Image 1 (tube, helix red, strand yellow):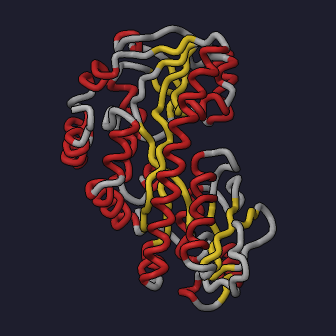
Image 2 (cartoon, rainbow, N blue to C red):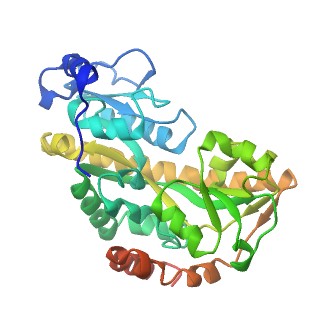
Length: 348
């Protein structure tokens, strides 16, 4: 769908709060929820003061990507750009921020490619199951001409500029019972995101996916309303699912990707040197956080084993083979991208 403007009083207030110049997006940050990035020593007043919207807080993949981006872009521009971080969804929900970005609700955001699905179905490519085989495969694709093609195509269709790529770690299943094969997942009750791609993925396996708010999942696992859930390992530990799930199954079915997002029209109106700095800072932050995330994944697995949890390595090749016709059957528009991504697997 196309981006919508906020209406009523909120739009009026936001419009009045924006400073003149710089395409109407040089905003003065509010105090609430703000975490300013380091200032360039001795720098004059910045030409561009940007608000960065983040759903999380320090320690999360997206937030830490945003913090590194803010520091680097200020450095690269000699202080001409200053980015202030607003964590904890203090500027609004993801959809509210994305829809209002063109009127200055925020100037930049770090989120997953898939969050743009309401603006273009092409964004669903991020959640395609068994598209990537490893961290190295992920990095090789997203930092290649093909990765740029995907980001540009999705971004142009949605009206945004997508930059960088931060590895979020593969999604795994945490469960109250042991499972190792495709057959084990038949009838399995799990919480899944309320997104078409995820629902179809689990239905393809014969499981029984149940959309549910994340703040309800812990209790649902306790009460056996669901038997499991799926998220990256580190995220699952942050939700304390180790307290209710003894089995951690490394299905590695989706390798999520966080990107730096800006309104495309605004980005295109920036001076070329500022554009170049934003792209460079995005890639710097994405690569640094990707490396850090891989280390966190390894540490998390060791912590789980030390706590007596059962970490199960499934036959990922068998699972991937089971999904070989998934894209062509359900999302034929993605079939070419999926095939090209598969060809870039360094293990081949």
